[in-house]
Image (cartoon, rainbow, N blue to C red; front, side):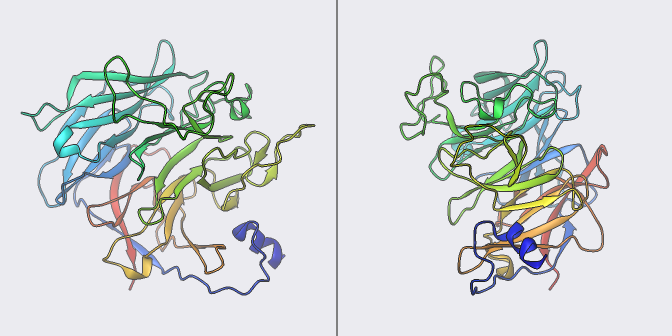
Length: 386
């Protein structure tokens, strides 16, 4: 039994090999915007060039600049009445500010729309003379038809390579009925990678020349990785450049993946490391998750962030993630052999995380609720108890 549990955490590493263990401290969560609550906050972000504020995104369609002192929130963009929120996994799903936000005023928005049901990746611009984003400036980059109202997926963010990445769910229902996870002819169940540096109105993005599936017949060249069910939150480690992703499971297993170029993460052939359905010619190069946990621990993983700030040295290199259904938090780290270890760090009170992000000084922030499917949420900081 002990060996089985170790294998769950360490993946392909030999659990009998000598290791230099990594340390995961106990943590607590502290409100960072005291007295302020938000209606279904689903993302919290650093604002490039702004040490005094953070960005808060609400599922209903609002994007807010929230001062870290006791100032008043500023509404940067209001898409209420535009986005579809009919189903609980639809709405304004993710926002990415351009790394040179103060200079360019450009942001990228991933949202659900209806009639027909679809998700759209768009670019918006803040006029130079304004502090807010012009809602009429929208330029559509991608439109993805969605067969169902769940598994819209969705994190949009810039990588250290200056490319724009987007996670897209498998299209929904249950069990991936259309086989989208293993179908590279569409963008469902994938991580997309785009070059937006030379974008024009006629060419909203370019395909990076090192994307893995260029010039392959019946394959979308935007795909960076595939075989994913519904990646809900992904983030880059600022030090290593690794892309960490939380992929929500179906019946039994939640997983954390490190996304590789061209990787096939197995859905819907596997759920986590476990057989979901068999094929005569199952691919031999499926990428296993680095961490998985079962239904006894939770039911909807929320991908987290790696701490690389300077305020809490004991957290350096620790990946903080959680589960929206159980309210549990975990820390994960990698020992000297490259093996992964994880430890529950929930604390005395469960807070149900919809998203993790970082603040201006690299601190780990989270959007949390008092229970699953609650409307009201707050922003907290994760910090060591000592």
